[in-house]
Image (cartoon, rainbow, N blue to C red):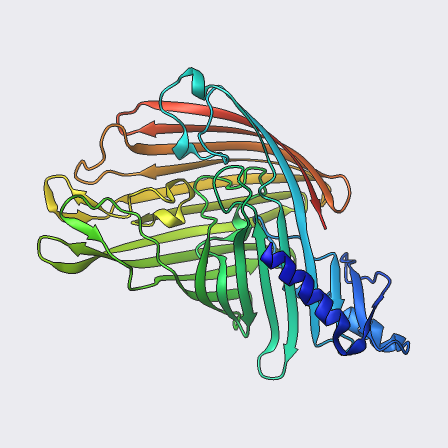
Length: 440
């Protein structure tokens, strides 16, 4: 609520600054992008300056718009100063998801195979839910400065800050971007936003790695069609320590890098090779000193536009001690574990995942269908994992999306998931999702 009040005050302050008024402009074309733009004027009818400011603002938001999994729509309302140096966009979406679990229910508001109960009972056969917590609000400002050039400031929130259906506001992103730098909170650099299709399910395929983190990131596009990125991100460690080791505060950020190559029509396709290295601290109780375990991971991901009406998506990841970077394993205590035959020693566990999907654009931008398969695996070292611990998770989806209007989207989705433990016992679940979403 405080953030919403602050947003309203920012808009009001800009509108009243210098005794100026906001004059609504007609819609202009910047390709297919036609927002409503409000220009700050002095009231003396300088139409030429208003048109110029309008075009600059539309171009700024078209050029800085980021596509991909769960990214906000391009702004519909923009407020801009007459000198084109400052503009502010306000927007968001209202989303209602209704789901019905049958043939096994997932113990999660999202469809997470890791959380499929391994025993069938009267309590876990069916479940119906209605959820509006993924509704969002965002603010985006673009400022032109002499020293830093174009600066983009973005923040957004949803209502997933507490337990299920508590609707506590949650900060998703809050970052600034200039000269290739991103500073703040954003989607982890290890996530390829354009490598997964749209799903009603909030988390998406279990081998994907969509998560938010605090970071300092630098991107270089100096070579044609190639991008190079380096990032330092806040570490988060989940492990099984046993009686001989203890958790301590982390000392070293996770290091992430990737190289990406774009190709195809308007460079709409890409392949990306990513890597992460982790120096994870813990305390050795027997020797009275701190020690570390090294985690690492590599990922190949991409999006290929076969034709204007067919898109392919994929990612494959392998590593040790990288639970935050594999959706199904995030939060599980497997970054490192004690060795069963020698509990005075620790080790990292191998883990992997892959997903592949296709989208058919029946009416591009209006009606499309998609489907895909995803799988995650956790490997046992030295027999550490017991019979009842997670071994494999599968995720299958098929959906259809229809933009009834440019702002109103309707969708339906079927999900199938399964979990298998180390002793080969397994269970499955099914979910039917429907969604109505309005962007403003």
